[in-house]
Image (cartoon, rainbow, N blue to C red; front, side, top):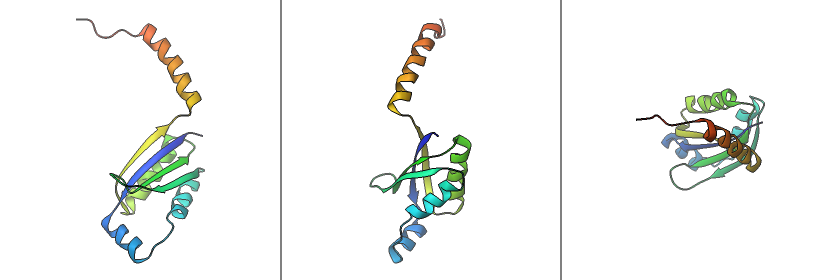
Length: 110
């Protein structure tokens, strides 16, 4: 199954709730991801642009998009980003594919 990095910023309301009643949101994330047949690997709090970073294994892009849409629909996050991750072996295979494309592709001619 593909791996995904999901990053999100909590809404002001969600942060207020978490401060008033601290709770482990990794369990909620795992439940959402498992609902589409996926597996939560890591749930991190982070500094900077996003408040959380999640690494999850999910069956496909459509399933991951469904998770992201459902979470956004709750209003708990204001911004999010999903990045498809590749293993090092997949990266090497992509490089090999790039060799084939580089040999065949030519940019527009003037």
